[in-house]
Image 1 (spheres, rainbow, N blue to C red):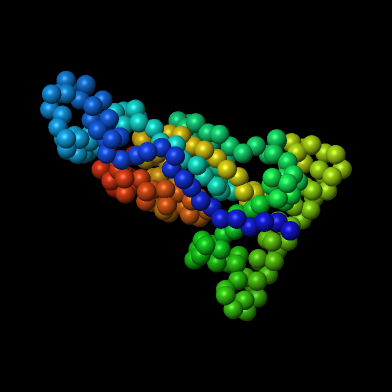
Image 2: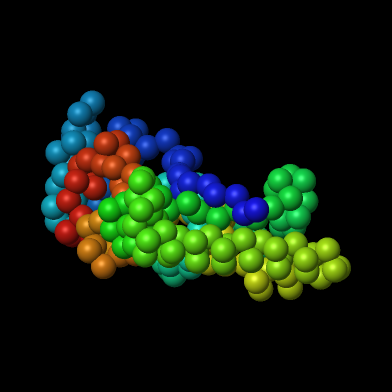
Length: 226
């Protein structure tokens, strides 16, 4: 049986006041005003940089984030040009091996309710027949993909060929590094700030944006400039 797992993330780069002070140090070279640096001068200076949309200054600082999500979502993340990515490879990972539990894993979307996925997952009382049927169809297709993959591997087919039967909902891990300006663009395009963003993407990116806003509110409280 296919394994159900949840989306999650981890910010791997320390971000906070020291990064803001670095931005100030870099930015003041433009104005030759390094002599005005104090313990808290970075606050007003970075606010000024953001207000003027002088975003080339914040491009000097990058942040790396680890994600566990579905392959369909990563197809959107890797379209961003100014990022570096390292992703779990279905060419070389053999999910029939013990370190993967001998099974494939897919992303469980029950936590995304309400929204489009409310039509996929049945309510707690499971009396809603259309939704119960939709979930049955989805789960059956995941189990079929798992069975087909294991059968192909068992017949000597290599992982890079057998992966052709794996679904878009397959769990994958991806590490993304981007400068602060590009993260602003990612948040503006992929979070709930964009109504048209995919619900799986919003569920993944919204918590990341919340952390960035908590640690670097001067830059990420307002995404309109990005």
